[in-house]
Length: 304
Image (cartoon, rainbow, N blue to C red; front, side, top):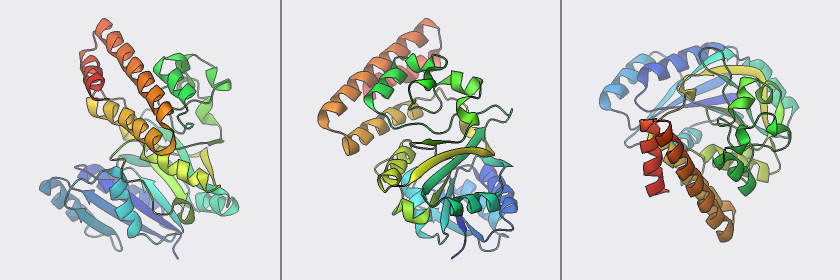
């Protein structure tokens, strides 16, 4: 069995995906590995461009999905084609920064109780992105929705759910500068032990939240989930978006998580918290004249 299978999903990002494959292949050259690229229903022109760019790569598995099946199902298709002891789910908009896969695999071999690990994510300017949080218990969701987890140093008391939201943690590099056990890590770079992930992601999640759910399943099997900043990558997609889709999708993924893992009363309370938080954000962005965001949260009010 080879050491590591790398699964990358392409959706109309042929240039980024090809660059990601090229750069990470160089980092993996001394490791037994396989690269699996899943095109998830991209435009025909994008598929043709990507196929051409990848055509000379020996041993690369390229699968074309007829439709956009979503992030979770596309990764599961990649998982079905994989054979490695470890599986790396890697976003197409990532570039290597400080990664040593021989060290990573050795570290995982030495820590058999670790089911999944994530590394430090950086923006292009070198600043740190959030990565890794704790399961969305009602109190943590309340702190997030009511802006309370923006308060500096609160992470010393409360373990936050949302990895990108608490800007104070990222700004002073305290939270993300240390190796720590977390409940979940983002799917931008998630390396997992094959036996820990079973059949992979829950395909009820189209996009957003599937990484939280996967890590919940991993921890339920008795494994640990670790954030380890010894290694790092550049994540080009880490910037915030004013689009309504990721906002609504994240809230709906929380609803799905509660339907799956919690009771009906907790789901009811979650919906109240989400709607209150969405309303507060809508009013805030109206007041601050951020029209794109106010429209996004107005749509979220209608759909969540």
